[in-house]
View 1 (tube, rainbow, N blue to C red):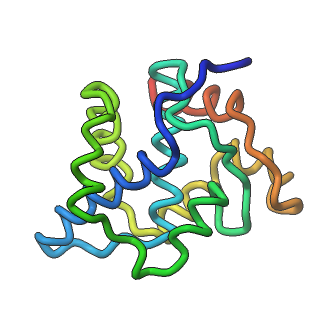
View 2 (tube, rainbow, N blue to C red; view 1 turned 90 degrees about the vertical axis):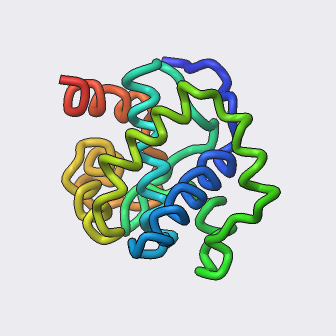
Length: 158
């Protein structure tokens, strides 16, 4: 299945999660890690596909050893000091529609409560990562958006 072009870059969505987690850090929650950010992007994309039949971003999600990854986000934010957002970047987040911000908030509320490692373990038990890697035997394969949509529709919308 083909999905219409996404409205956002993967960086828009990543920055939203970094910004949202920053508000939680001020209340004593754990700092955002690259592992957690990558998993939140995967869960956001899955929820958007299942609920709206639309991708949030166009970049491929790849099955790596530690779960689903958007490689260019990993490369950009692999230094923990980069997992921050400036006031200028935060101001630009208003380009994300209110409906999509609501979806991201729901994803953060549901999946953000897990630790990075907890999310990693969760993805390893889910069909999209299992199928893409042939149960962990073949890494670096793109995870099909059709598989993601089907899994999220069957497991999170019922």
